[in-house]
Image 1 (cartoon, rainbow, N blue to C red):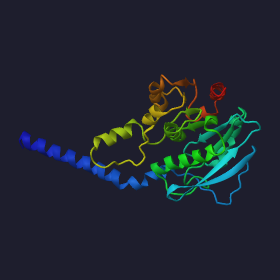
Image 2: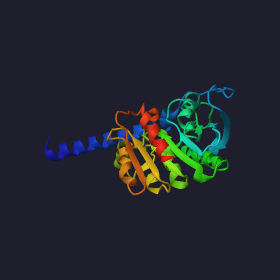
Image 3: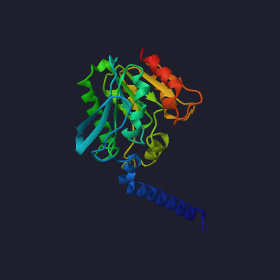
Length: 267
């Protein structure tokens, strides 16, 4: 076999593998939303939490229904619009309320679709439109300059997107991350350009953070490969970056240093 035939065979194999992988990624495209599902709670479930709260429900686009909890303190300075991580429901996320209430801020937490009592199909479009629906409802209760958008993990992605199209007092991203949307996923999409996208959940957090009109506080672990560290140079002229020594993605939200930082920036 001469060299030209061997090269032709190798090129053919590469093309077959290339389109084989692309075909597989397209075949599982509709299943990608499964990674964002969490435990569901019955519609009549009663939350049992120590803090004073009001349960609210908001109809949203594309058949969505969003379940939220608003925790209040007397003489609050404003409200923290908190976007949680991917796992768990308000049943357990409601337990973080005291960490923020002691700062004399109300806190508002929402379950994503197919989390807890929230309903509807999961998509990137719905993540974003649901967040805006909730934010608009919150603006009817509080002046926008009294709203602090805060997001942890996946919620950091949502918070950044809200900050890009609204004008809160402040935006706080606590180790913003998610299972998709980082460099590796963007690299895969670049490989297959101009073919249709294989990923339905490409969060554009870097673009969102550049557009944010409010000051942005980024609180990160020491992991240099995290999204938080990638975002740091994008807000050097209008924002603050904090790195917490010894914190992990799992511990940073309730870390003592995180509480001190948030108390400081909210003064």
